[in-house]
Length: 206
Image 1 (cartoon, helix red, strand yellow):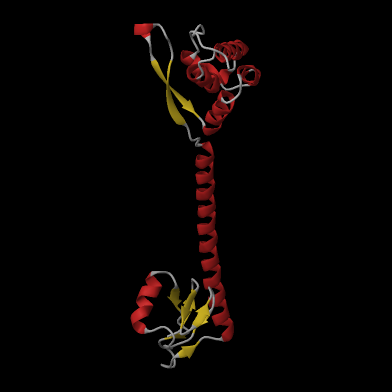
Image 2 (spheres, helix red, strand yellow):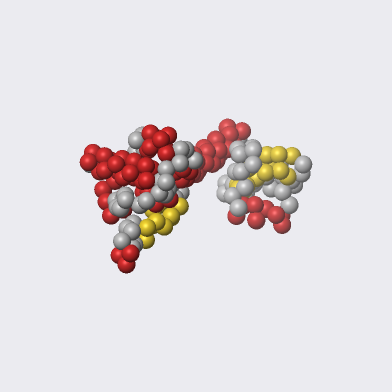
């Protein structure tokens, strides 16, 4: 029996592509059922069992065969286009989800320094914010204060205030945080509970 190739496959050391006819004898009977179920091939009947008028088998004309093949190929292409469209939608959704995900590191800091009322606050810092904090920590007090004046991330300012013992750095972080708060940036509204407090920690500037 001849078959119509629906998906690319190799049989008898020959690669067949969708729309091509696989000659009789290439596909073994014991494999045909599995390949049909998997959608790799479909049966291609070029003959009808019996002509009621003559009692003889009738062979389709070349034009009829071409039309049958064209219909089968069109149906296969339609299914492939549908699958491709579904995959493109799925890929777009994955990309949108992935782009919306931002990796953060939870860093615990003290939000107050008045003894018993001391509280620990978790700051969700992004990798680039942590990098900026370490960069400023390695500067001297004067350079650090200048760099802090350009900081726009409240998380960076909170981490600097908590990690750096130098009074100049602490005061600069607090002043910059106050400026950002006064600007009224809506993106920082959820962080009001993490405002820097207590800027009178004694520490030698270096």
